[in-house]
Amino acid sequence: MFNFARKDTEFFDLFTENAKFFHLGAVMLDGLIKDPNKSLEQIEEILGLESAADEVNEKIISKLNLSFITPIDREDIYAIAGELANGIDMLQGALQRIIMYHAGHSTQRSPDLTKLLVDGTNELVKAFKLLHDVKANQREILDAVHKVSDYESRGDLIYRAEIGILFDDAAEAAKEHGASRAVIHLIKWKDILEDVEEALDHTKKVGDMIRGVVMKYA
Image 1 (cartoon, rainbow, N blue to C red):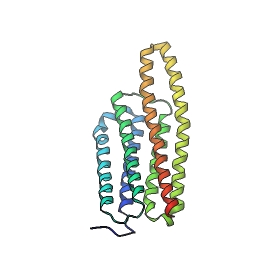
Image 2: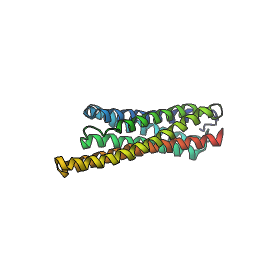
Image 3: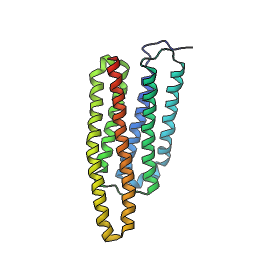
Image 4: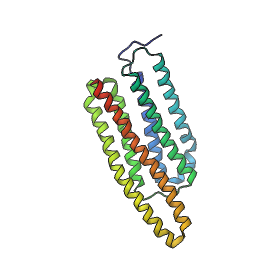
């Protein structure tokens, strides 16, 4: 009935699977930011992303309920699974917002922001792949988590600068084309940039949780 295997890696494999979905969502978002015209072609793939990730999360919870002994604390497994799911939900929301808003061409540096998100989620995948042997892989895991934190910090700078430029551009556009059009563009891209920035912040949150597991078990 119960799993007593200390070396069981299935939890880590499932974490990695959902980290890959997180990364895939970031790649899709990066692609839509660069070319919003592709949004209609990707609707089915976007809608399927969250569903597939939810299935993996259900497997984690089901396994947790049936496991007497777990490779790391049950609370950590539950928390990590939940935050990975939350990250995927954030990206799903951002992707759907771009489609719903008919957002058009992005702000100048928003592709830089999504590139950091792609890189950060990729580092999370690397870290989760190594987590099954914390002691042996401690240095590599912490290196990946450090990169995630660095990408998030760089993203904060880009986000703040881009929001400022967005407001400045809206003010100039209002003089030339009328306030309504400028305000609509501002609202669309302010919301989208906030979504991307929040998802990038979330990569750091997940990375910090991984770092916490390393500190406990390395």
